[in-house]
Length: 391
Image (tube, rainbow, N blue to C red; front, side, top):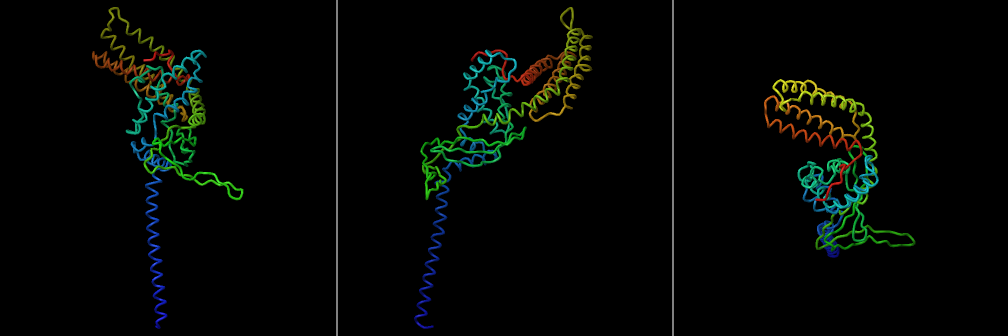
């Protein structure tokens, strides 16, 4: 090999090594840039926050989910949407009464929403839907909170996936695909996402024109010093209710019509049995004799309880549309609790057990709650018959 050829090959080898070094440097530079972009930029975007929220919700990570949802703001806006027609279908209200109740539920908005936040937080932590209790326990504010939760659809709405996040000035709008489990109606929920750290800035996302054609680069909003992207409102929640509720109300109306004859028949039977029960208990001294206790116990065991079981058996044979599941389950629970109450009463009078009589009274109160709840659903009512006083 002559000297020229050797030097030429040496230069080529040197250039090849330089190119390889440049390629390796460029490769690692791209990796570092990607890592920097991911941790310093992308993790501060609303897209990242929303995807993290979805993952947290599906995996049961309650704290991460709460970090990306301002439950207080969301429930306040949702309450307004939910209660905008709360009394529209109540057939037992006059126009004046309807107006009074509408104004009243504006006044108790904060208490109702605080209860909703408590219910949601309990579900996130335990996976169980409970009632808020305290001032919202029972009917102190004139509303059955269990019915309100059912009408909100929150307990039977499934989150499918995050569809997209679009920047709008300093805020963002995220869309999620959901499905209402009873009606199987799919829907796209739109939510407003805000950076509550209030220090974010945007890159891109601006319109520009080239040769008469308009273009728009996808924008990114991030904060190198930290961000706090949270959902603050569900913008089309009222639209979701309007899309699903009519289907569920139609299901409910069909079920009520199909069970009306059974309910009417057994209401007459129960009225007759109640008259007999009252007659059997009558005593000139005010206390049932031993023979009376035996007769009453036999009447309950052989007549009253079988009538309750027969009624429920007939109801169970009627197909239950998805939108009527709540009413059907209330009737089942009412029957179960009523039978338990009667059995406790029989044990109390036959064994002279004050504890069993107390249990019977407690179960009877639960039964009345179930019955009133079912009655309000049948009459499209969400309120008590008397306007409550503010605590």
